[in-house]
Image (cartoon, rainbow, N blue to C red; front, top):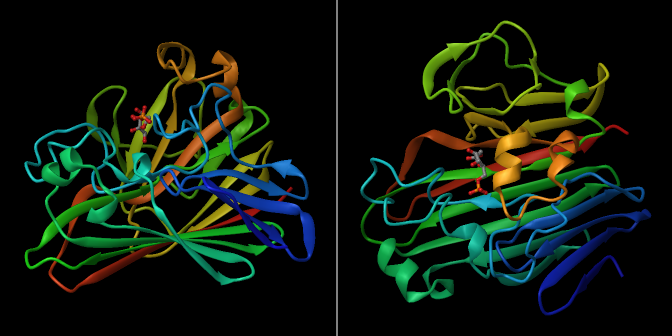
Length: 287
Ligand code: TA6
């Protein structure tokens, strides 16, 4: 059976490789596991709540309709950090084919407080496809079904599992401008491939459509994003921030993860009534 479901999750197993699978929770439509030939490829905190009481710490949480903490954008400022999609229960819409499933989110899935904090009619569909035994595709479509326009951010907050983050490099970002959240400094740019040896939290703008995450100089993951996703956030909490997060375990786990997050977060995208927007990522695992 390529697709199995229980009351809280759906699992796709690849028809050609019973050891390759992806598991998605109804909660947040969060991908919490992606196995390639038996090996887990996504980092998931050992103390992450998976019962719907708190956004998942790991996997691929979906950020919508705002990225980051409330700031200077009145239309989304009543929402919590990273919006409500990752902490809402999505409806399982069923399978599209033996390797693809869909989840839907609309105002009918929100609690009263969230609905009043973001008072729009909308339809969001998340599609998860195990495209091959070593490739995972995730996409989101956002449709404005209201009579007024709305602004939104989208981000695939992907936690990649890596053997040791200090031996990881991320290529394709040289000379790009970024906001350095750790220093609260804008418009920095770097000449070297990204490497991580301390707390790292940056929003790179106008990033290329393909990024290669390497380990020991060899490709580990290739991530291809749709042109509609213009920015990439790169994050590793390192010691002090990992220590502060109650749902981050083990505390040294930051050595084994890197978040490379494709999205539209440097500014808001405006969607007029009846308009639809789509964004997608395709992740290939090389090992
Ligand atoms: O995407 C990076 C980031 O915004 C970081 O600044 C860090 O706070 C992280 O997300 C985790 O946020 P969370 O709300 O899941 O604790």
